[in-house]
Image 1 (cartoon, rainbow, N blue to C red):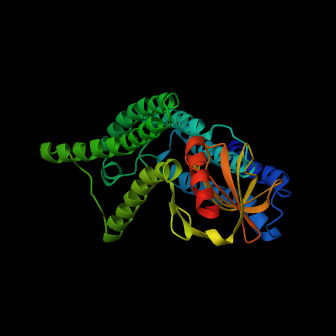
Image 2: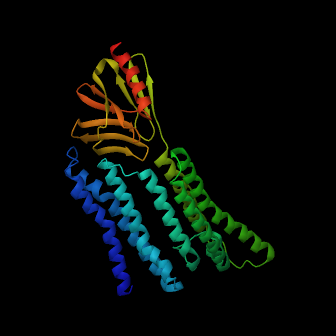
Image 3: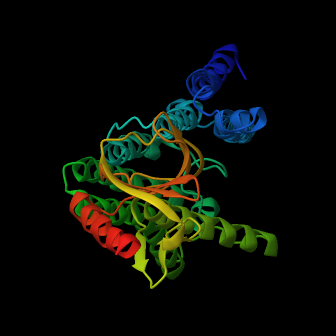
Amino acid sequence: MELLNKRKALAGSALILLPALAGIWLLWARLPGASAPEKLAFCLGIPAGMLAAHWLCLLLTFRTNRQNGQSKKALELVYWLLPCISFFYCAGTWSVALDVKLGWERLLPASLGLMFLVIGNYMPKMKQNPTLGIRLPWTLANEENWNRTHRMGGKVWVAGGLALLLCCLLPGAAMVAGMLVSIFVLAVVPCVYSYRLYRKQVRDGSWNGSLFRSKADRIVTAVALAILAVAVVGTPILLFTGDIHYTMGENALQIEASYWPDAEIDYAEVESIEYAEGIPAGSRTNGFGSPRLSMGSFRNDVFGSYTRYAYTGCDSCIVLQVKGKTVVLSALDEEATKALYEELSGRIFG
């Protein structure tokens, strides 16, 4: 790589590592319940993985770039896409751990919209290659298919980026639905277009490519498409869905939570119960967090170390002392949490 390219690569690497240094500075003292290796893993794990992926993409891209002379504008995406994604993702992770409410449920579709707008603008400039762009059997085997798919895909991604930006203005459930539909369309439409174009080329005799040179090519393509489908559909579902169900049994409260182990609280083991508002969650030492759910092991200045099963959008909570340990619960909103508190109090002391 030329000197300028190396500088960009190092600058992107520094952007990826910056949140790790900020995480150590901000979170080290906020995670007293964790050992030093656990703290290092929490602060360095995501940036280290992103850094490895960043350099892998650079090496693969520039290896093929020697052969096909990829557009310089398209290569800018390789330098800056993963660093920007890493910076945003780590900032969100740190804010959740520090209980800083920045409205990430709105920022996520906005950031995705901007990303798709940028990529969509550069997509028509991408030359045929095996590492960068819409890598399908039909695009990789035929240059005309590649060029037409990327011209059409660029328009779709720009329109999808604008749709994701508009999703920020919608109420919660509608915003999630809009995100899911937009991302699904962005992923599926270019693939369908490329395949239909391939079939048309075969029918009119203009197809001159060779699909699947080996059985390994078939397997790799199938695995790549499966991973793409899971990522496109699974990530928004994981971030914006999930529930906590409370069932009042005769002798115990059953807690069934999405994406995290269920729990049971015996009424006879509850020493006290309190309804509270405005208590910060503190820092998470273990568990699952999303714009919708906040669960796992936490620590704050009020309770010390405690267990939490709560919705992030609810400012009230139920505080239980169970065999000397603190458990914090909440329902979807303040009204439902208050009703849960009254019913649970009646079960415990009734």
